[in-house]
Image (cartoon, rainbow, N blue to C red; front, side, top):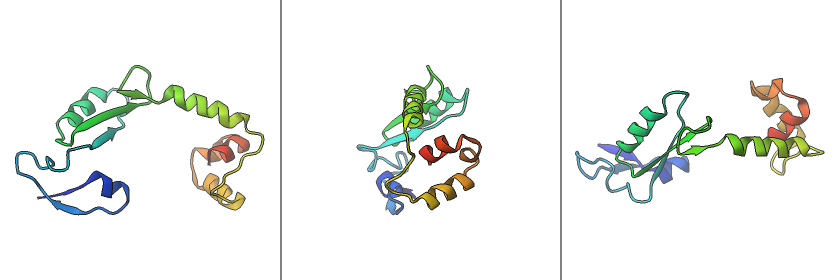
Length: 122
């Protein structure tokens, strides 16, 4: 049996490792590992159950609905949205204006937003 370690998968380089034992396939790699689960509405309890039974150490349910999941991103999202709207000039240290326009053109969400806000979020 093979498994993909979380650190290598996040870096884009999955590596095959031998499983610890058939009963706990990820026991050797369970130390200091955390799985983030993003459920859709009304599936939080199911994903929490799945996360607890993966055998991967900790699992965290991240929700976009207040009062659900271990972490709720709603309030942080709106704080960041307000900050983006207040920017006088959208810009990115990582993307040129042409690249920002390309991101907006390709994204189904951004192309329908106000151009200033879309450029800030790109």
